[in-house]
Length: 241
Length: 320
Image (cartoon, rainbow over all chains, first blue to last red; front, side, top):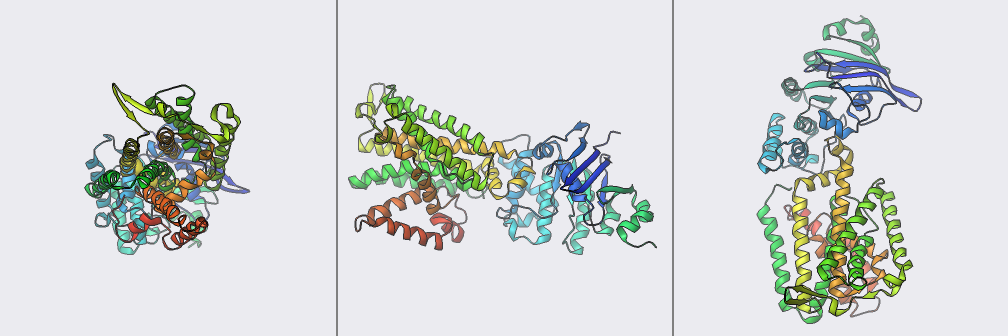
């Protein structure tokens, strides 16, 4: 099977700091992959390179068999790479409805009919449990609901690869359970790349885990293998048993 | 915002147009002429609002788009002897070409740099008008002769210098542009423009080519401003370089700020308000600009979103 996403020697320097250092990464279709690592390991920089928010210093990104390294972010989104931000960046002054309508109206194939936008928006809001808050300005939603709105916007893009950057940060425990169910559901139709600090969430969701440290991939494997990996325990969990 | 109450929104706008129509038969002669002029300049303000209010791009050079329409139409009549409709089309054409070129260059910048770049281009345009004084009349300007300002429909001649004809032509243009802007801001494209204003980077990450969307907005804004300029030349018969000066880049900004940015009727209210404040105060004192200045400061302090913007915020959330 052809990988959905491959990076070869992907690097990004910020001044003297090598935030991402020659990363070779492969992601298979319909996988849920978690990316973990200590703060400053380069996880967010790595997914920003994949989504096109920032340009790499060197290396190559291949999505679905085609080189996308030089493509601007909006073209990558159209090809099916959706990115939900670590720092919540919904349109605070627009209603939740309008926030989701923006991605929905762009992905609609039939173009014209108003009913189609409405149906698409409400479907994405239903899936994330925000339907009854559709006409609230996004800035007035609780933090957890804003995170869910981010996910709804990502979903509405009908992505083939959905990148979730710390989606459970700031969510209550009850909300996290719903979120896990939601991601499992999404994984039925899309590949999920998940940056996450909450280890129980990672262990429950991920098919495979990639561990970053100091801009490099330290280890990769199933949740069980990563849990047993001594190098990972030293770098990330801090203590060897 | 764009899904709510279409009947209410269109009803209100049609009501305003109907009111302006009725006023034509009620107003005394002086105010009749003034309101015709205000409607044409409100079109200029609506064009400015497209870009400033909805996309959040503050241009300090919109006088050049107004002047492109003004000179495009004026020169076509005076130097080439074109008919009124052809001259109006020439004005629009100049607006399209100019806004496309300026948009392609100026949109490489944002924020303060965008303000300065648009202002510089407008200055260049102003100086070019003065430089080619043998054609443009330089700082004297040109008068469009009365016989040239007649519109022919077969055998019927419509004299644009006739006050009622002029008022109705101004109202026609104003109504058309008002309904077009209303349709644009309620459309999906309007939603994208507002998204760019609120957070351009995020809009890109939803798959939108923000540069093309902004360029289209600059051209729409440029066409509307040029339409206003072309109508001004043909209806009021004067084509002057002062309309290309910095003052006429700042005026639409003030009108929009007063009336309320990103509101469809704000430009009309702002233009109307400013003209009437000047008109009333200049009747009492020669220091009327002082009073205008104080009125502006009070408005900015107590109604920072402009007249209609504040009304929308406090009472009528559905206003487009």
